[in-house]
Image 1 (spheres, one colour):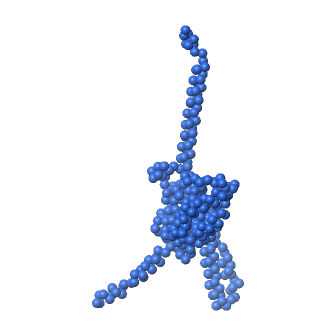
Image 2 (cartoon, rainbow, N blue to C red):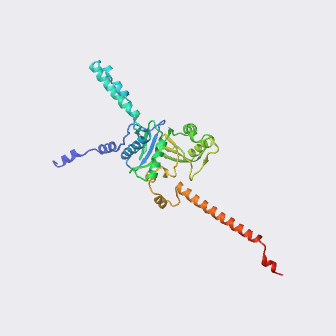
Length: 324
């Protein structure tokens, strides 16, 4: 019995360990939720959200500083604790200092260029952005990685800019996208496009209905907008998570391997081995140029040959004249 007592004291309810595990795995950004009205970057990862957030901060910070300069913070909170409060009584001064600390934390949070929030889906991280254009930043990152073929992340898979969010209900989406699509598709602007759709933790939306309605809105903005599923100028990204619809219009979606950071750094040879039918736009251009030159050369040779033949036939046939 004596040996059993220490063992009994060491036991803990199953819920104790479950709760602890939940706290350990909870990603940074807990308490802040993805909601309509936010802009940012949606990132999918490989089973490690905490490390994904760290990689995202590092990568976005690196390129954010290059494009927009080092992040600046307001000195408003320093002014709040100026000398004009020194004459206050001790208790009042303590209360004010506490208030200033709270304002400082709130201000820093609001002014941070990148801030992780809970996405509402497993293996998905949402980084809210402040004061930048998500689509330009992400396109720059992918363009650089595609050019250098330098791998910079381990757990991040796809990185999608989210230029706008609204409630994930058909009427809300239709009303929102009528204005949201204008910079790309409203006359005189036009382009070829495709729509890619993904829903997570949402069962009330219909993929077919969403694509049909959004394609109709693009067509109504300019009848010259045409669908191209092979190599469109623009790809409309629709990512629905719970009751939030995340939207963006991106370029080079095919060239940048669906905005997959692991795939975009692979060499053209690796791409060809993995998908022999896929070639880059540069390769397509070179092939088309070579084919055009070959066709022109062949056409020129045929024309010269026909010309020579015509000249021969038009000459007097001396041998024929000798025939009686």
